Image 1 (spheres, one colour):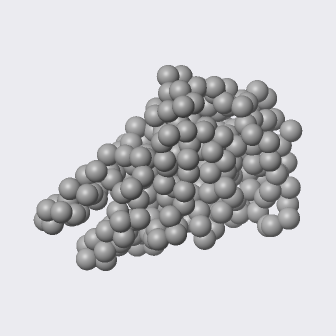
Image 2: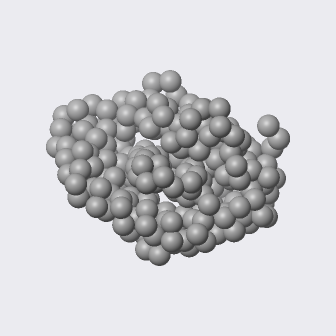
Image 3: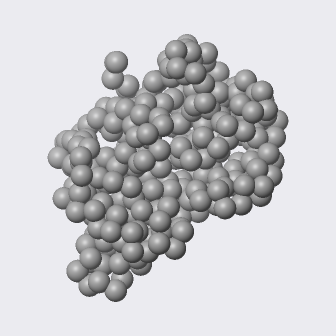
Length: 275
């Protein structure tokens, strides 16, 4: 696949070539949507970073943490720290997983002096993919190709814990042929919430029902977001309601990798919005 032309602000090509990035794949990307991982890797490599995907990585521990299983959460956190602490940056295509590492690891390991210090160092260099490209790498625009209208959902954790909001919109608005149609209440929860949707399915369904209503009302042909959990939840609801709206991770659009089926569609179907 051709390299995507990118334009950057202050960070020089020489700087990017000397900075190593450890790519945190995330469980949902690995098991349900590997194309998101490939798209993210393409974006990071096209930006000029030295990229590695540590084989030792595991789940970030968020499901255990949210369920109160702190012992297993600590074990997983230590495994992630060991796998990634040698890199200049740690980048994940998920605000949820990135926030777990950046915001919760230090508190989770606060009673173990050595691990607390290591957790703080890892937390300080952990970033969500899109905010990393814009805020750290200085990316100002991409020249990927996409013809059609999209709407963007602000995932709760990325927005509220990491401040991811304007960065994805900046890059989306730089794509020629792409029309961004903002939905009403784009920053309202989709109802997934990880284990919340399992513990409280009726409440979760009520929330996602309201969410998909605003998505449809936007008039956009494609729904984008930066977290696979949210995307799978909304795609499932849209599919059950018979909606033709495509659902994709924003990295796939930015990397010009939308030839394959959208989330929730059968393998073999070609993306209908690719120019």
